Image (tube, rainbow, N blue to C red; front, side, top):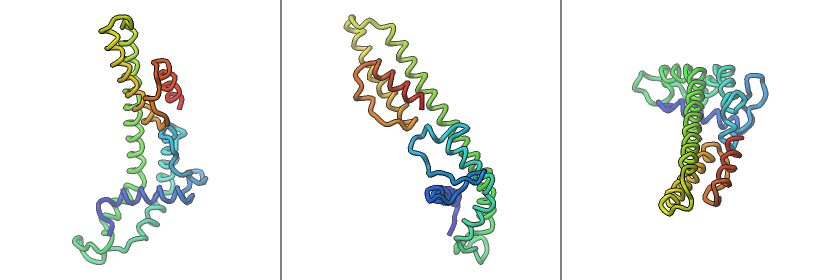
Length: 185
């Protein structure tokens, strides 16, 4: 039976098809499997854009193929032996515009989070620039800020899908260059 989580099942179905090379982009090219780096997901040339265009272009056919995998509910609205007409209609609507909207919202959230982390790193750098390393109290505060910067850099690298641990980096310069490499992704 296909219940209210049908759109999740449908999305998983599309991802499975992409992994098997059975889903095509709007221009008919096979959609590649989901990329390993999250930075490759978003943007005008990102994987999610191709998936969005594929669902808008081929959505009507794809959703019917998906619905054909399930029996139709033979009884009334309380019959849970298959897909109700209402659930099928809801999925048809979601299969075209709903997935595209969800992908756009995910990209917007990812971008906001990425920029928030970059601003936080810049603020930490500014705070550290104002501290004297020779001053004992300021030196302790500088070390705390450096630890926070490494942790924030690690969050940024995770958001970008970049491998490597910020904890293995020993200086602000090393952490800055790692963040710049992550930013280039």
